[in-house]
Length: 318
Image (tube, rainbow, N blue to C red; front, side, top):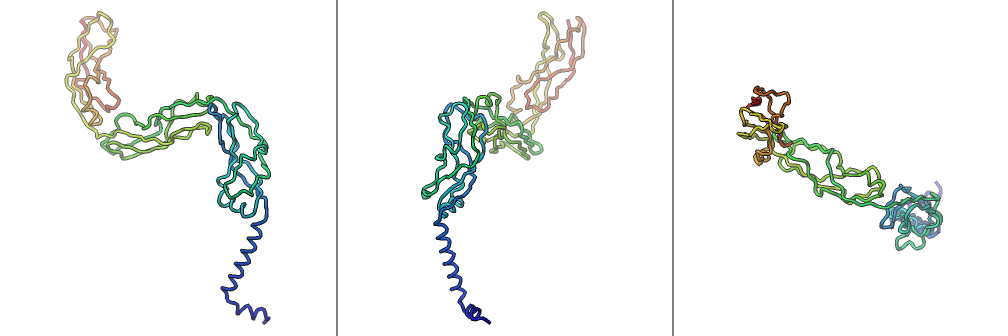
């Protein structure tokens, strides 16, 4: 057995670990105090833009830069602050098209306090960022829920349309794109088992272009869910529609009874005048004759069914 092996077997492990730690610390201290260069990819952002303009063409998502600084700063930048770095484009003076050369604007990459030794030695690429802006258009657009489906519990029904709060949102973007946008839709959603007043916070669907900014990203939807009910309406008058001036037609009976089905609160608050019972005039009707004609009913959309008694009436042409 060598003398070294004999000695090492008697070294205290704690002392050995401490010595190694000190050695590593001294090595790191020396290395982190040296100057290095580091290649990094950072996002492209807009710091300012002309108040009357909007971006009309996509920008590159990132640029690649070469940083220079002390090893300690580069390590901190990589671990702590790298996510906050960006190439912040100043477009406040741009009103049309502009070919931005990133290497001419290294000052648009700023470092947080404590990293004064850091600098951008080179922007590797892209060589040019093509910027296009055009007059901006801002407007309030209605919120629609064309892709929301609500399935109430058995014995219940949705009454009326889905309502949104707010019912309009502010949208801003380049005029060429904004002209073809007339409403903001929600995400596709399905809800089951609703009762009474059903509310939910929903996300607005993403637009096809990231160049359009939507101020609100969520809205509250509300749907009126009511228990199914039945109501009888008696003595609803029957009219003849479309008759020429001077032509007289008599109907027997002159009134009908209706049984309507729908949301219980809705049908009990319904004014009978909102339902119209009628028979369209037929030009082939001849004088002094009688005809058996089917009754037609017009009613609000939220009424599920309307049963009339009688359904077939007698038309007398005098």
